[in-house]
Length: 169
Length: 103
Image (cartoon, rainbow over all chains, first blue to last red; front, side, top):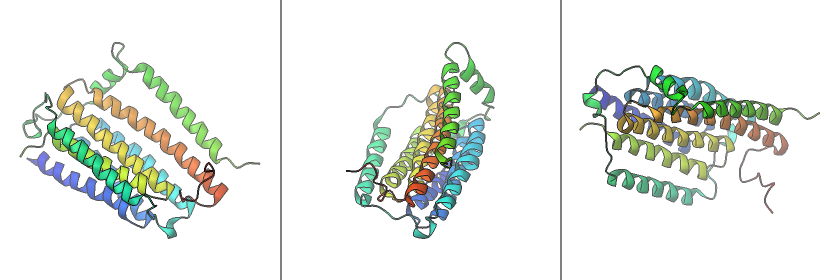
């Protein structure tokens, strides 16, 4: 019961703050509601029993990405002009509504083979960090090579970001 | 009424649709990047919900979500560096006015 209530509350906060991101004219308020949205998505992960992922969400999204976005908003001095809509606003609204309808229809009509019980009859959630580590690094069916590629990708992103913002002499 | 897989997938679809609308409609490049992050979060919610309700103990969906977060962090770093470089060159981040590649 508590998980049901928290799902509805957190889901409402997620959707309302996401709407605030796209509807608010003030870009700083949009950025702050984006942080609120990331934070409540971490709460959604907790209702799904993903404790490690909730921590990672707070660290990476709220901590790193959110602060980076706010910093970029400050560096570009476009805050007084707000975030106006372009010419595509009607087409974008129609396309967004269409995507929502199609995805909702697909979710509604697909006969999911649900293996786990619903939230209400969940036993007390188990820590997932060990299982995640084994799933990531086990030698049969693990993800060791993608993990290494991800580290190379991060290195390339760091070097690329530094090169892009370097002052030209 | 118990919350099941469908509820999480509907939440994820709504978040994705909001992010898609923002990414297409907004003219400030930083706000467009924010909306792309919203869409990535929607995908992560769907992955974790699938992992919780369909896969069971293996948690493969959560491993995928970690990879999505890694790529999102790299993408936002490079994207913001690009936006700042364009801002230095053109003095604006208005996507309607950045038309160097248009002819």
